[in-house]
Length: 221
Image (cartoon, rainbow, N blue to C red; front, side):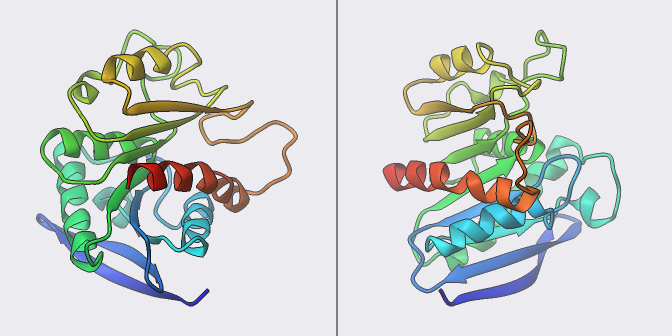
């Protein structure tokens, strides 16, 4: 498939961040992807995931948060991360040609996307690749209040060994959100979607999540 790749600089408040835009011919949808707290936009997990979406005819954007752009380790505070999401989503909508634009991100990036939506950011739906419902071992520290009241389609892809949201913890949250929130567990996977004795590399692991996401966005488009 012929896929056009671009590297772009996106102004986001007082910051400028890098984004990678990949567009197949006549894409059916666009998916904007943010990284987790510990890795930037070019992590193999994300490039594998977006590459598989591109091969299926979906355009993608990957982008850095300002702290990753600057080579820092500690994530940005929510206001700066939300502002970055808004800026990249606006750029993605300008190039989408009227096709739906989704947000599908890893861990921290997904939580920031949902906070941006709670504050008014427009998107066709949210896909969480490992939602950080609480810090590991601290199930009382829930990060869920902003999710209630969101009415757009939401897919929570979560490993069954994910210490940030173990089985039985995220499912009740999705139930309270409503029927438009769906939890799908990846058997034996942890927060990075690593499965014991699985010989796939990170790029292949990310690509392996694409079919479930494609099925979900096709139903919600």
